[in-house]
Length: 458
Image (cartoon, helix red, strand yellow):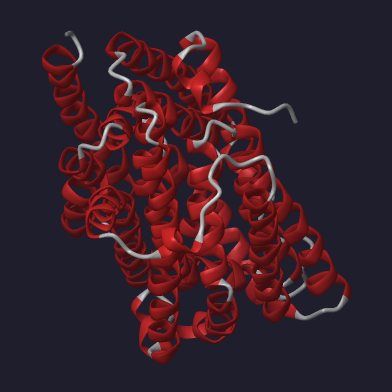
C-alpha cells in the first residue's frame, strides 16, 4: 500500500476523498457484519435455533465492554484528527498513549466484574429457559477475549484518524476470515458446539489485535509513541471521556435495548420471538453497513478540516456524506422489503428431523418477514440522523453529539417499546422502530441545520 499522509484530508476533493475513506470503511464493516451473519447461519444450521438466541443474549454484554475500546478510540481519534489538522503532532502522540492506558484499565476491570456476576447478568438479558446454558458457555469464553477486542477496536479508529482507511479495512477483514474458518473447524469438523462458536470468536479477536499491533509497530503509522506518552493527562483523559462517552453511551443504550427487547419478546412469545429478534438484529448490523461506512469515512474528514478551520470543506463533507448515505440506505430498504423470507431461511436448518426444531423454524419463518419490514420501514431517512450526530462528535462538541446519538434509542425507542406493546402487543414492538427513526431524524435535522447556519457559514 502506498504511504498516505493525513494532510490529504484537507486537500483532496471532498467527493473523491469521502469515497476513498468510506469504501474501505464500508468493506471492513461489511466483512465484520458478514462475519456476524455467517456466524449465526453456521450456528443455526449446525447447532440450532436456540443457539442463535443464546448468542443474541450474550452479544450486548460483550459488545458493551468492547465498546469501551471503541469509545476510547473514537474520542481520542477526534482529538488526533484535529491535532494533525492543526499540525500538533505531540498532542496526537500523547492522546494515543492515553488511549492505550485507558483501554487496558477499563476493559480488564469490566471483564472481572462480568465474570463475577455471570449468573445474574445472563437472565437479565433474556437468557432464560432453554437459552441459559448455551448462553453461559458462549458468554464466559467470549468475555476472555474482550480486552483484546477493546484494543483492536480502539486501534482501528486511530488508524482511520491518520487517514489510512485501507489498513483499517484490512484490520476488519483478517479476523472475520479467521473467525469463519475457525467456525467451520471447531463447530462442523470438531463438533464442539457452543464451545466451538465461542472459541472461534475469541480467536478472531486475537488475530485482529496482532494485525493492529503490527501496524503501529511498522513504518506505516505516523504515531510512534514512547513510554512517556502512556502517562494519563487530565485534560486529554477528560476530552477522550467526553467525546468517547458518546459512543459508550450509544452502546450502553443498545445493551439496555437488547435487555428490554429480549425480556419483552420472551414474555410475548418465549424463545421463538427472541430468535426472531436475533435474526433481525443480525440484519440491523449487516444491511446498513454502507451507511455506517459513509459515516465512518466522514468522521476524519470533518474533524481534520474543522481543526484546520476550512469550514466550506466541512459543509461540503456534510452534504456529500448525507447524499451518499441516503442513496445506499434506499437501496438497502428496497432489498429488505422484497426479500425478507429468503433472508430468514438462510439462518435455519430446514433439513432438521427434530420435531421441536421444526416447530420453531415454522414459527420464525411465519413471524420474521413482517417484523423485518416494520423494523426497516424508515431506513431511507436515517442518513441524516447518523451523519448529523457524527458531525458533532467529529468536531469535538460532545454534549450535542451525545444528545443526538441517544435521541433515537434512548429518548424515543425505549419509551416506545415500554408503552406500545401494552396496547398493540407484538406489533407494538416492531412499529416502535420506524417511529423512533422518524422522530430522531427530525430532531437531528433541526440542530444540524442550525449548526451549519451559525457556525459553518463564516
